[in-house]
Image (cartoon, rainbow, N blue to C red; front, side, top):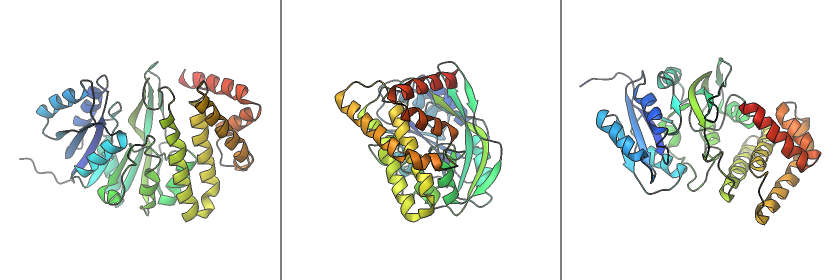
Length: 328
């Protein structure tokens, strides 16, 4: 039996409806240069062949453990994975994404310097045209937990995502993802940052984030997508209370959440959604003067506020042109 001199790392992968993507994800995990892994595949009641594919891989690699549970959503699956994990460190990978061969080793070499969390950057992959955009600036920096929260609020290199991070399991002693909510990472990651005196970040892309049709982000609007606003406001309220000097940052992040939700409601026709859209627009116009005065507000945000001020039809046209340009 091979003896490893490095700590066990738990790789938690929630699985639901990803039979077209799960093999690429699994292949990228089992091929990792860091070998002392516990690969936890949480079948969240998937109705396709995803779970069967996981079971096949588990027969070939003893590090893979497949758990089957009734559907409870992404948060519930992540929590289930945490509770069934044994690793000293935890990392999350979405089952339609994949990673570089040295992703885990890269993140571990950062935390072994004495930190509870390490972060890398993303490759953003568009399945519609195969376009890949590399995020990050290649720099390695040491940030306080508060600095990470502030950068997250401005949507800089540090983001809310659960993946592209390696975290000591002690960070989850009193934290779980909010069950029944989507955009659950927005409601959790800031609490993980807040427990860290320092976070080591190397903004080199090692994680491939796949944007596909019919994912949570790109699927047709439904009421659950309003969770983004709820999760963001909960985060902002916490930060405003603990770090009053960051109210400009959290206000920018609130605006981002409202705009992001608005962008998914551009073509809704249901009366209830149309009324909710009006409420969102009213709020954005209310905070516009303060956000526009903030020198750290991204240029794209400022253009969005200007277009919205010219009227919803103008804003709608602007956003659709922008998205088409961004995705090539």
